[in-house]
Length: 100
Image: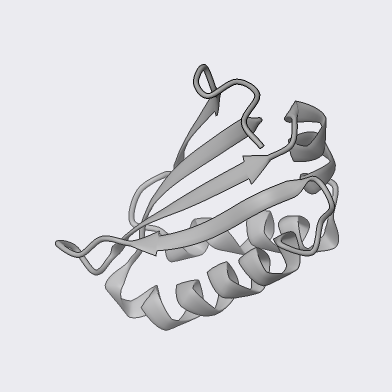
């Protein structure tokens, strides 16, 4: 499995637009065959702090995701909604192995 965790801090005046864009991206991403799970999470302590937790079958699936029309829209629009640059980290699982 291949995991992507993205940290996003949203401008307060852009919150509604962010939620619309994030749910659009997530709902379309969940239709991709290589995606196991795609969560949009909101901090309980800071309502402008979000995380995307994405799980792909493998890195190739993640690379395919980046070629989709919904990802292109996400990438084009997300920058103007954030109060700081997004931070992305990638992981593979150690345990359990295999993770199914």
